[in-house]
Length: 431
Image 1 (cartoon, one colour):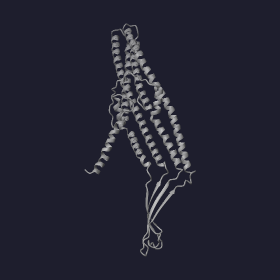
Image 2 (cartoon, helix red, strand yellow):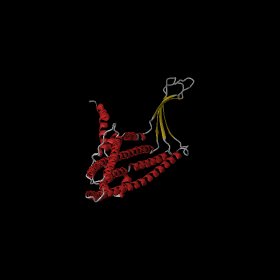
Image 3 (cartoon, helix red, strand yellow):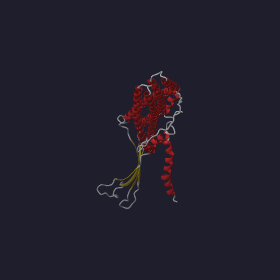
Image 4 (cartoon, one colour):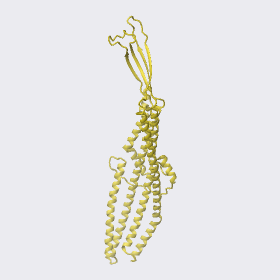
């Protein structure tokens, strides 16, 4: 097989495929901690999001600009006629008449090409940090919607248990009333509580569908697909050092990375603006061919070369202003970076405090309030059966138990939502 054909096949077919398969796992992997059920959703969202794909193409475009930024300007090739007499247009009449061909090359002052390439690199790095930030935000939003859906699913389960419980209590109240051992108002009270639960059931069903729609939107699906929550969240035990979290955020937060790269780019532009005070060099070489004279004698051809430079005669209106503008932009970027740095530190502190507080609340409910509520509900039922407490006291005890369980679930899902927010903020997964 022709060697050239093999080379072209490898270059345009095999190489792109290899690059694609090597790059795919990096962009599909979930950047935040997620369960076996949540991870595929996050990966699907990252793979389907058109804004992320647009940023990837922009990064590719900016990367392609790095090498051309340091290249020399294209040389100029030209032809001309020199000293041709305008009265006769005779090439043999005057000895200085020439047919000339020349080539010229502009050479930027030393260091300019490297600085232009460096500036292009910072642009590509900024866009990469922006892509990382958007991937984290999307992953966080998908995780938040998933945990909200989980809480609604748990709420519907508890709501069904409440309806079942009140249904039994309602039947018992009816039987007691028929036998003369109960009051009719107990039946009415059970009916009211049941109606409230049925109303809540309708609301929960609607909220469940809304969250399914939100997840479908975040995953950029073409049509609606049901989303079934199937996770069982383990007991949270997140321990971390606030100092370590702040340090990690300041090193890895992608929004800060964007500002850092912006500052570096403006510093490069300042160096480039200072280089513009020095002139570029233009070199030209020309070959002039002369015809024989009218006597048939040869005439020597000419070789010419010139070197020219640009003169910064408008320095106060051009170079000085460009340097001042680049310096002002660097100061602006530095102020933006410092402001964001302080904000991120406070955000980390706030989220970490929320996680710790939510864990304490969850443990309080699970280890203390729920056992106490169970004892209260059991005791109230026993007391009601022997006529020692009123009907509403017994119902309140039973309902309070299930409400405590619902609140504990709310704390649990909020813990995992805040963890996703915290990981998106610090730019790394929590251990």
